[in-house]
Image 1 (cartoon, one colour):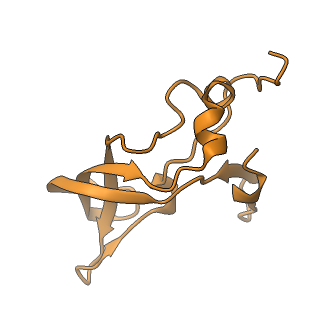
Image 2 (cartoon, rainbow, N blue to C red):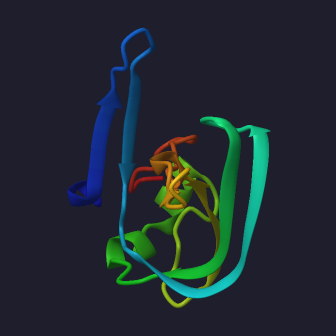
Image 3 (cartoon, rainbow, N blue to C red):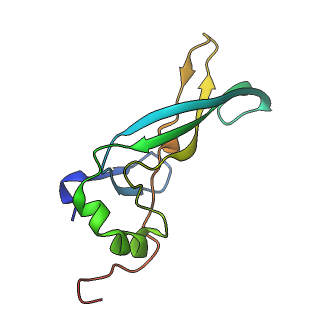
Length: 127
């Protein structure tokens, strides 16, 4: 189910534990509305001193949701948690965070994407 959308990778940073990531994407998002943009400067930011973080508050929809995702909500919800499947033609709120560089350009930390780790038990067709 959705095997062709599976994205697996691992991070082997020197001196740190290996981080294993398994996630999948079943459809691109379409931004419906930008609701607000805010900036805040932190003396001790995530990456540097006097770091400016920019938050963009949006409403979005997932487009081209495949039938296997829509028709297997119970299995996906059991594995990833309730409301894990974003349904077509439904608008969802989200926040996208950026770091403003010294050059004024915005940079996005890739960890801010919606990555859901399995937290439940996979249901089989018999369940």
